[in-house]
Amino acid sequence: MDILMLILILVLAIGGIYTCRLIILHLQHRDSPLGAKLCSTSGKFNCDKVLRSGLGKISKNIHLADIGLAYFISQSLFIILESINGRIASCTEIITLPCLLAFAISCFFLGYQAFLIRSWCKMCLIITGLVWLQQLVLIMGYVLRNNISKDYFSEGAFRLDHLPSLLMFAASLAMASTWFFIKKLMAAAGEVEATKRKILLFKKNANIFRAALKTQRTIDTTLWEDDFLLGARNASTQLVVALNPYCPPCAREYREVLQLLQLFPDAIVVAIRFFAPPKVDKATNAARQLLQEYSSTPITKQPQILEKWFSSLSLDDRGRSSPGQDPALEQLLQKHQQWFEENKIVHTPTFFINGHEFPKLYELSDLRMLMAKLAKRPLKFAPVRESQ
Image (cartoon, rainbow, N blue to C red; front, top):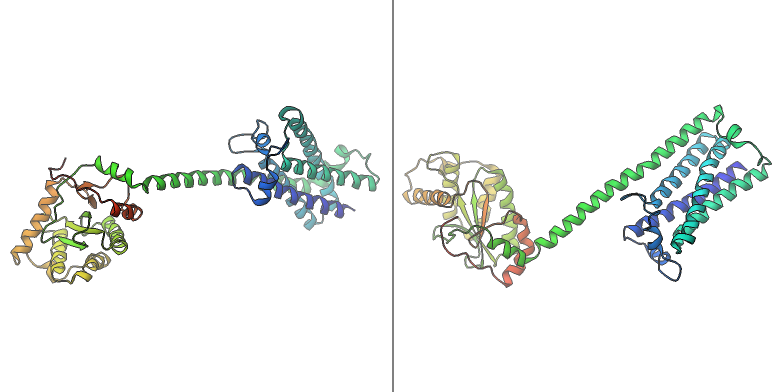
């Protein structure tokens, strides 16, 4: 008889878990088809009025449905674990008190809907029905066992031999209570995701990007005849990159430059300006090698020059050659360094779009979302003036 009682209570508890889940999804505006149908407003039925009332919402992140979910989960765990351990009789006796408490709360909440809110929630009524059915199962079980008059509190639940079952009940309740922690993490993750979506919408707006560019400092980014250029030379969007050959962030951002060139081959031109201090150091030697290699490489393979360099960071004989062997190359190196100094560029990589410094709120990868709109309405070049 006890086994049949526990099976019926377990089935009802699983129904309670499912219904509480439907309520939680509804509160998160993620209704399932069944939840949406049950929560449709008609006449005296208004789920939102009940669920979002003062009693329905315990705190910011905890709702009465969360408590119901934890209750039914703990009940299910306790029944399953106690059945496995063979403590059927003690499980039935111990589970009676929580069921009585749930029955009392359901009666109170039923009166709250009837007399204070004067609206009904169908899913709340289902939960109430499940709790009442569980109580009915227990009463019928005691009647059929002819021990309904038994002093439950002194002889049933708190006997010494029930200690293992009481500990198991506490463990089940603790395991079920982890839902509150999980929900808090989910709520935090949801807020982060919502913030990301808002930022993405902000960044995808080309008009906002144009307005942000106008607030940035402007410099002279007129292209040189001997510039390290990649992409369409006459493109309406010009990206100038101040770069150090030994800068790890430069290597990461250059991969993004290659993506832009691949996605928008006719809409963007990229000019690379190298940090090449007058003293002979590894950055100057690397810039010398890269500029020399650029001048002797076909246009279609020029984007791979820096890609290959960042993968190896290895100088060959061109980079190790002493200054003065190629006066034109040395003059170009000085031109690069002079550009850095005149425009007060103190860190790499630094980007300029049509003469405007790239806004700090944006990342270079954001250009992927913006380029299609920028190509339709090209960015105006900044007036040629000294850097601010």
